[in-house]
Structure formats: structure tokens, C-alpha cells
Length: 328
Ligand code: SF4
Ligand code: ZN
Image 1 (spheres, rainbow, N blue to C red):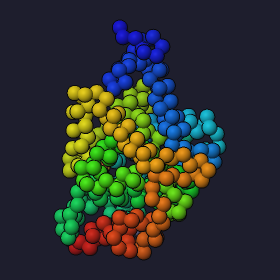
Image 2 (tube, rainbow, N blue to C red; image 1 turned 120 degrees about the vertical axis):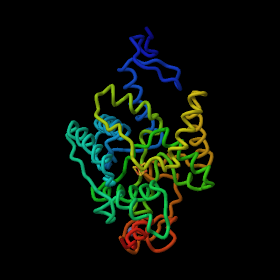
Image 3 (cartoon, rainbow, N blue to C red; image 1 turned 30 degrees about the horizontal axis):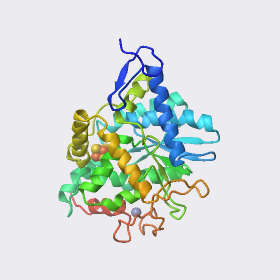
């Protein structure tokens, strides 16, 4: 029998990257401490915040909501508002929504929803059919990533949120870091951090990533051990995703060389620290991890327009417009 490295009780799992065996109780405590550490290190949520918590029905966001609830109760004067984006992917998201509803019901929190159809006039399933006739064809996740960010920001604003918590775990962060390097888009890492936002971007709800120190596997363990329901199915469009390829690559390296992903995460964080992005901004509540430039609103929808948008429209309106111009 293996012993828990923390309390000496019976271990139920081993985290290879930490070279430690854990019993269920010590594992959950360790997971919650990691979230609290991220909150402390990057000044993510504070007293007085209204936090929109993005939930999807998956394990990461379910674990995040549970731990944030505990953390919010401990800190006090923090309101959590779960929000969900329905992409309109039949057989996938509709099943995940049921899990998200169960989680919110258990925590007695109302779940606010927004769909691509209502916000942008096109569901993901429709977008995938229409893109074949559009002038430019993009990968499925290129549409979906832009639409999701747009909807999350919109629903967070509707909820009156001062922060938007995203369930990106350590695996997601290392994948994004590596993807940006592989694509030659290193400047994207400037705007990517545990906390991104600025009071100069009035239309943009600052984003926080409380799971930055927790791996995907740990999120799954946490849900299983705490009997938190989550959806296990995969997205039917995921096979097109570049992220999927990077994820497989990192997992295979991790298997041969445990600790590689952790090293990559540490490289990302120390690089940002070297660039002077220390996130220690308690006075202003701002993150230095972004270029604090205000961009004009989208001329069509009035929402936040990032500096990547070339014209007067936000990227979501551009992409949705390309699809709407298709005649079928
Ligand atoms: Fe959207 Fe791609 Fe994720 Fe599917 S895999 S939900 S298309 S981002
Ligand atoms: Zn727009």
C-alpha cells in the first residue's frame, strides 16, 4: 500500500510531475491551496469583486467554480455569477450544459447563458456548414475561439462583473504559450497572463485564470474525488484544432520526461516577470501584463475591438459577417 506523502494515510493517486502520492483529502486540500496561491500571486479576485465564472460543463470550469466558491466565502464580499456560452454544437454542448446546470444547482447559483445564435446570429453547427461557401475558410476553432471570447465578455458585462474567471489550467496555458511561439506570434504572449485587463479598456472585462497552477489531470481528480458532475465527451470539430496537436505533443514529452510541462509553465511565468510584468498592482487593480491601450468600439455591435481587428469591426462581427454573406 502506498502512503500519502502528506499525512501518511492510504494514497489513492500519484501525481508523477510532483513525485508525490496523495490520499483524497490531502489531494483536494493541495488543489485548493494552488488556486489560493494563484489568487495571491497574481491578485486575481478581491473583496468587492463581482466575478463572472465561465462554466462549460467540463471538468476544469466545474472544479474552478467549486474552489472559487470556497475561496470567496473565505475572503468575503465576493459575488460569483456562473455564465455559460452555448456554441450550438449538437450532441456535445447540449449534453455538457446539463452537467453545468447540475453543478450550479448544487451550489445554489443561478446560471446565466448566452448563445452564438443569439449574440452573433450563427451557431457553430451552422457556421461549419456555411464556411465552405464563404470567401475565406478558417479552422473551426478559429471561429469558435473568437465567438466564445466575444460572448463571454458580453455576458460578463450583462452580469455586471468586475472580473471574468476563465477555467484555463496549466496545460492550457503551456499549450497557448507554445502555440504562439510555433506560429511566430510571440507578441500574443504579451497579452496573455494570469490576469489581463485594464481600466482603459472599458468594454473589456478583465480576465483571471485561477487554475494556472493546476494541471488538467488534477482538475479531473478534483471533480471525481468531490463528486462534481462533468461532461466527458469531446467536441466533434476538435480534430481540426492546432491546439489538439500541440497538446498531444506535450503529453507525449511529459510521459517520457515528467515535469516538462511544469518547466514550460515556469519559463512562461519567468519570462513575463523578466519583462517587468509582475502583476503586483493592488493599488490600481490593474495588470501590467497587457498593453494598456484603449481601442475604439466595433462600429457594428458596439463591443470591445482588439488591436488585431483590421477594420472598424470587431473580429467576431468580421467572421460572422463572412458567414452571413454566404447565400445558400
Ligand atoms: Fe470550439 Fe474548437 Fe473547442 Fe470545439 S474544440 S468547442 S470548435 S474551440
Ligand atoms: Zn462587433
